[in-house]
Image (tube, rainbow, N blue to C red; front, side):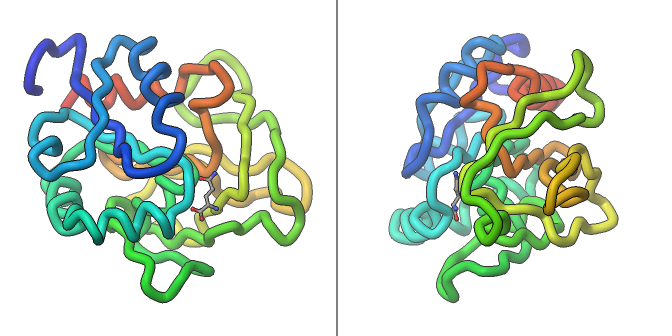
Length: 204
Ligand code: GLN
């Protein structure tokens, strides 16, 4: 932990996507959010959020700014991270239905299918149960979302789609201190996922 254990510094990858929404949610959870876009800034964070947006654009910008390898290394060294939607895609070890030149970060041993719900419906909301989070079902907003098609043996499945054509599909996972959701907890005002993540970061 770099500074005050109660107020960890959490970077939000600020290359593309819904950065501002994560800033507010993290601040409300007592963290100090900072935007990161340079290698030197990765050294000054206790945890990292990769926002929703467009994974192929995030991938291209990580490559252009030479951030890919430094970020992979920090994740290998145990940097806690949380990715929502495009952020989940970036944290995967394998991505289906993406561009052939798209890169990813290997933060979680999982295969993620990009735009997986798209054939049925682009965007939708549902209430789901999130393992380990109390207080009743969570409203989940999916926007051209991915799902987890394969979760490795060290990966905990935290939430699945409760009903409908995609029932049973995995939409939230955790491996050690890396967390990923297909949906966007930063847009609903429900802070429970960000609270879980800030607690993970506090425990280091
Ligand atoms: N479909 C987007 C992608 O491929 C993700 C959408 C989102 O983050 N809301 O990256």
